[in-house]
Length: 295
Image (tube, rainbow, N blue to C red):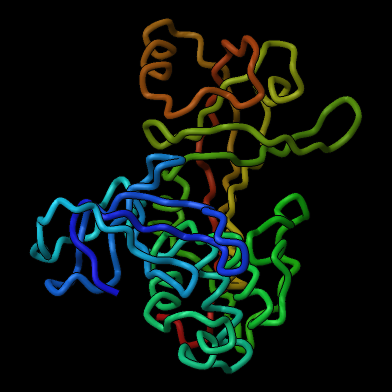
């Protein structure tokens, strides 16, 4: 297969000839016009790096531009560098089954170069590609796409040789400072309770917004625990960081204004949540599960 800039890549059903998708080739990676190509899809406007399969062909533009100098992959439009969730699931499933790249690609009827790209880059493979990969790896489309995300994390297989290690204060602070969603644990009139909150770390303290009179607001004036974690189901590893300290309400107008300006996100729960609560870090601990040979 050879293409020129401006040609169209057409993906259609070999059986019916019905066009499923087409897009303009806007970038070449080889001077002779062979794949892969940077394609801007007509239906979405997205640009992706494409390794055409047997169901694809080139529709010449007639512009006569000739093969162009190879281009770098289009960053920002085709997604960030590094593997996405699908790619990490693919690589982990393949590793657990002891399958090489070439054998998995043969089973899935695709190029090993394309499979390698899927495993190492954030990408959006077609439904047909995912179905072939799921069949080749003995899994389901739902699992490969992460469609089981509504289930509690950690349902995958444990690592063959896991290692649980304590995290130092510096690493705990680095993980905590990434901000996101954490859980605050406190005693209420109905007993111990845990609530998820959107949080930030400002001036060395954990801060979050809530509504006066809400359950998280009951934390003010008491010792609480705050926990944040990350579970990577595709790789069967993760970490958790635990903060213990006293919660207080932020009432100074200048301090509230500063927190409003520095907040990364608004509370996902919505509604009016003008009360800022700050948790001082009196004790900070953390743990990580990783492969035994991970340094």
